[in-house]
Image (cartoon, rainbow, N blue to C red; front, side, top):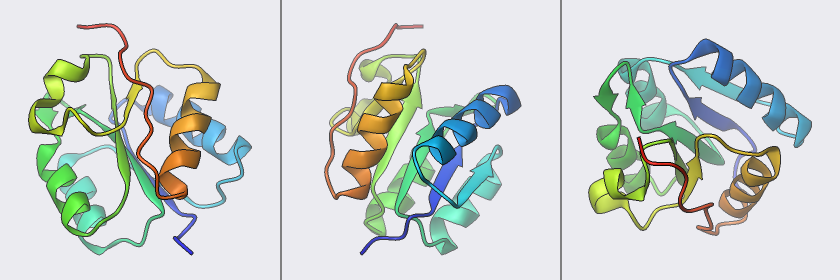
Length: 127
């Protein structure tokens, strides 16, 4: 059974706190938050996570390097972005939790990732 730990990669503290609370409401007991690219990379390389919610940009830096590590380690993840699917480049087929999102969107994405699926809530506003 996959780990029920979730890595949340988000650089906005208010959004991170909101997401962490929502994840706990969904029954996730262990949420690790990383707001910097270096910390996210280290956690992706060494952590044991059931899934990862990965903000596309941390302080203006794209997180594709983190995505590559997660993909290599076969840790399921979804991008969290308001930039739209086109901004995901070679990762456009991966699940997306769009900004803004509803709690039901988060629930759908996390449950799918934890169950080995790849469903995301595609779309969201561009920008």
